[in-house]
Length: 385
Image 1: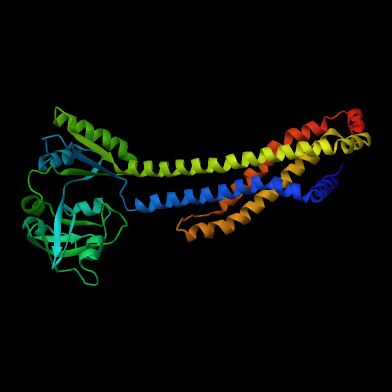
Image 2 (image 1 turned 90 degrees about the vertical axis):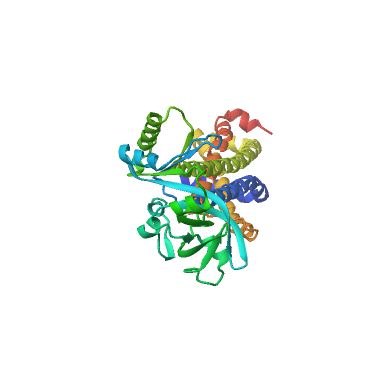
């Protein structure tokens, strides 16, 4: 039997049983639409992770002292790592604390960091206006500050903050720079002071600074981490510190988003499997109804292969129709969900995967009924009532 005849017979059967065919496709429609939606949610999750960490320098290590430790890092530790580390590019000390910051009658509690100028380069921080610290600021202990975008928005709405005076714990500082927003809770709500000024006047000498170490290359991160651990073990006879690899944090967040996407996609796959079981049941009914027809076709010389192909093609076409309708349904559902602030990023890949799943489902679940139909004995089929 020619392929054209097979398709003609399949379409005649589908059209003669329109209502049953439509009901059969419902599971496939739901499964395909679900896969498209969950892929959209997954892509949105990945984008949010990438946006959140877009400005983080993945070539950095942060070394902090345990909370219950009396130890503290110092300039000597910085110099030691500077001298002996082969894979580092820069090493900086960073002091951090939360302080009350005020301008005129407005005030807020924000993070204050004491840093030297290389910190901004290591952390990929960019100025929106003003300037970074200069050597004279650091050497002369000038009371100057650089603020993040959130601090600017909170205290200086509609005002240029450059040269304005803010008060931190009762001490006045002149703002010399404003940083570009990074959309990050870690960087935007921060006030930066020269390291020695922060240590002497604001944060205090009892707070242990962190060590921020930048690698020469992203490929050297594991080597740098192992090297720093080795150097600190040589310098100290006990471990009182934690090392965080910012690049690993970013990768972990991305992997979590991917895992969530896979989990959500599996829900769509389960719905498709249920739809596939529906197709298989309907095809078994169809085989039973058309048993006499199958016997007649075999008596006229139709091969087992042709019978198998006819039922298998019918299953695939029903699945494909369901997949196409599922894609059409997703065009309606996506803007509906977005109206309720559930953002999604739908790519062509989601549509292709959904349709492939639909066809695969039809092929897998349609094969056994088609196989059973092709192997019906001619005599039994012709006698079937």
